[in-house]
Structures are given as structure tokens and as C-alpha cells.
Image (tube, rainbow, N blue to C red):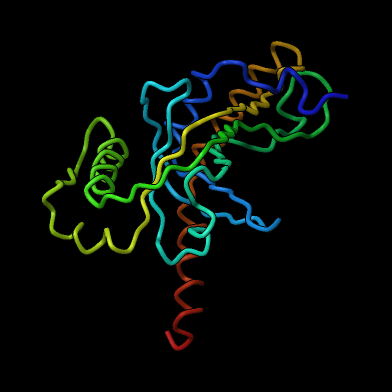
Length: 212
């Protein structure tokens, strides 16, 4: 049996890019001597005239994964879109529990940015993209704070060589159930996370400062 099933494989690169652009906080995976290195960082997509374009990013120079980011090194970047548990109660027909999700996997080759000004320009472009259509902040190349920061980061690009979309949203179910599952996925993203975040912050603070 083929895995994943064809109906869970996205065939549109444009749809995969929608995931990349709307959920830019990615998981970067590299391998060195059979040991995986994993870091979670924002990665921004840009066109550059190549077949699939590129990802731009930077990483703390003291991160052990830096040792794997040599020119030409192979990487996998995972972008996770919305996901949620689908209860059988969601459907109009009898079904079993499942989990729906939207993922994009991009494979590529590293190109290091050795020029500090190039790294700063990348930071400016990334900030502009992440600020969105109604920016509250604009990063300037002349911002003196970047001169201090740039010595502590490694800037790089990833030439995208292969892409895969793993989109599971009840494609094998009755049309009515697919619509119900889609509505459940949308609803799940509106969940109030304030209690969870407050609890995590409180527990983290207590772990750092037991006397508080």
C-alpha cells in the first residue's frame, strides 16, 4: 500500500507555498554522521529565478546545527499548518477518530551568506515579510543594533530542490463529512490559548526562580 495515500498528497506547489507563507516558523532538519540536528526558526520564501525559489533564514552561531550548514549541505524544512483531532461526532456518518493536518516539506541545498551586509539585507526582508501588510515596525539597514547582532548569527539560503504537501482533511469521506471536518479544522484554530500560555509562563518562572 502506498504511503501516504495519493489523496493526502498535495499536487499544487502554490498550495504548498501558501503553507510556507502563512506558517513561516519552520523546523529545520539536517544530518551529520547519522545524527539528526533540529532547530525551530522562521524561514521566509523568496523567488530568485530558479525552478522552485529559495528559503532565507538565520541561526545563532553557537547552535550546534551550524556545523551541518555547509555550502551544498542537504536540508529538510517542515512547515506545519493547522491540525486538529476529528471526533467521530463531527461527521454525519459513522466513522472512527482521526487527525487532520496540513504540512509542507521542502528539501534543498544550503548556501551560506558570508557577507555581513547580505545577512543584514536578509534580516530586513524577513522582517518586512513577517510584519505583514500593516507593519508596526520597519527594520532599517542603518539600525546600529544590527551591527552588533550580525556577529552572532549565521545567515543562509536554501535552494529548494524538492517539495511535498501532506494535506489530510478527510478527502476519503462523504462530501458532507468533508465539509464538516473542514469546519472543525477552522474552529480548532480559534481556541482560546490564554489559560495554557499563562500556566506555561507561570511554571517556567517558578522553575527559573523557585522562591517566587
